Each structure stands twice: as C-alpha cells, then as structure tokens.
Length: 164
Image (cartoon, rainbow, N blue to C red):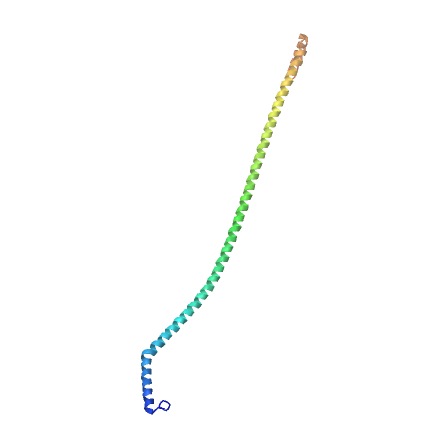
C-alpha cells in the first residue's frame, strides 16, 4: 500500500528526480525541440506564403496570357484586314491595267482599221482614175479619129487656156 499512500520521503525524492529530469530536459531537449518546431512552423509558413504568391502569380499569368492571346487575335485580325486591303488594291490595279491595255488595243485596232480604210479608199480612187483614163482614152480615140475633129478640139482647148 505504499504506492497508494506514499510516504513523504518518496514524494520528496520523486519531486527532486522530476525536477532534475525537467531541468535536464529543459536545458538540453526542450530548447532544441521548440527551436525545431519553430523552424518547422516558419518553414510551413514560408511554404504557404510561397504557395499563395505562386497562386497569385499564376492568376496574373492567366490574365497576362489572356491579354497576350487577345492581343495576338487583334494583331491577326489587323494583319488579315491589311491583307484584304492589299488584295483589293492588287485586283483594282490589275483591273485598271487590263482596262488600259484593252483601250490601247481597241485604239490600235481603230487606227489599223482607219489605215486600212484609207488604203482601200486610195486604191479605189487609183482604180477609178485608171478606169476614167481608159474610158477617156477610148472616147478621145473614137472622137479624134477624124482629123477635122482633132483640129476643132485643139482650137477649143486653146481658147480655154487663154481664158483661164
């Protein structure tokens, strides 16, 4: 029954032993344990802070990525619009050049037709003159076959020359 009703000496010795162990543990174990716990607490706190900062950075990057994506889309749209303008300009320029070329060809054809027309008219006039000369020759030959008629015609020509 000594354990149920301990004696005063046992209590003193137990208190003294407990105090000695508590002193030893405080001096050699408690400070390193609390220091290690404090370091672990700081490490965990730093890790949580870093995780929060990283999460915020990721949010910023998401926003930044979205902004970059939007900027890239806008730039793509601007490039496509510029390409459409250039395409339209090239088509308009090609149409204009084709029109000018067509006008030049038509003008050349008109000039060629006019030249051919003039050549045909000149040829027709030459043929008409030749025919007229042939007819006149034949008429004069027939009319002037008689010497009397030749003399009359010569006199008539001399009168016309003097009056003109």
